[in-house]
Image 1 (tube, rainbow, N blue to C red):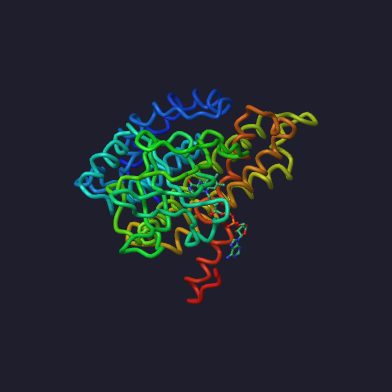
Image 2 (cartoon, rainbow, N blue to C red):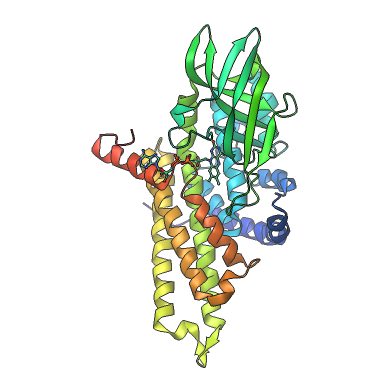
Length: 381
Ligand SMILES: Cc1cc2nc3c(=O)[nH]c(=O)nc-3n(C[C@H](O)[C@H](O)[C@H](O)COP(=O)(O)OP(=O)(O)OC[C@H]3O[C@@H](n4cnc5c(N)ncnc54)[C@H](O)[C@@H]3O)c2cc1C
């Protein structure tokens, strides 16, 4: 495996760094304070290929390979994990739509997403259904030419602001007896209840609880075939985990850079704290974790480039998200009291890196996915 970036990848990385530094970083503090997201960035991010760039050109993408794509997510995570999160919650539906949408749905839902003109969420989790996604209780009953949707969804990223979402519901119709299907639910077309859910992590990602109460969804908003939701959502899982892993690597690198800079400038006992062996141990341990996480994350990217890479993406997601929070914790320690100060980047990175080990399958679930792949026996249920 070759870990060197090509000259084109280095050029892209430098362009992204300039963009993030000049156009994203100045916005972060205000949005963190207000718990909002600068959606006006989306069309600009689309120009770099951040929205669906991995799709083939014939499908509206740029044919970006997964290693380059990963580099892009690492840069986003380095600067702001809320940005990485909004990019993930846009790109997973883009992939699902590209695989299952009919021509009319592509025009109405996929194309505006690729251009950054609309925003989206995916709603699987419910108050009583988390890791066991197959247990979804939200119901969609076909009545005439409409599905009547009833149920609640919880922890939905961008649920608060998304123009539309892909909602998973147990479906009842003459052809479907309770299997899970996907529905395109548009807030403008069929308004539904949405309530902000404030969390300590990823404050600018519009986390919400959604309520559907006898919501009539036009029949043409069924995405794919009735009963095939699990097949379609599984397709997006590897990609989502790859995004989270690379975002975590970026955030961990940012924490390490901040700690290194602080250690060289902060003086105690008449010398920079970087001169103390115990501070050097922190920096060395952090560096080893960042490098290991990056290696696993790019290994997953290479594997995904070859096809499906469930085990590799689970390993990358598990290791990188756990390592990123450990690194952020050590970086905060190196900062002393300043590390706790609200409004400083290390405090935000510490909180946000805690937001990687639960979504898209918890650390425990990733462990069981890896165990199943290694041993051929599932210990999940
Ligand atoms: C910030 C954030 C954003 C999210 N965004 C979205 C979104 O956009 N869309 C969406 O649909 N969902 C979203 N989620 C939900 C997320 O996918 C779930 O939180 C996650 O799948 C875990 O479900 P749960 O929280 O109900 O925990 P539970 O499933 O109740 O798990 C509780 C604990 O039990 C453990 N556990 C569960 N089952 C097993 C098992 N078989 N073996 C061992 N341990 C087990 C878990 O690892 C965890 O430690 C988001 C969550 C967060 C925190």
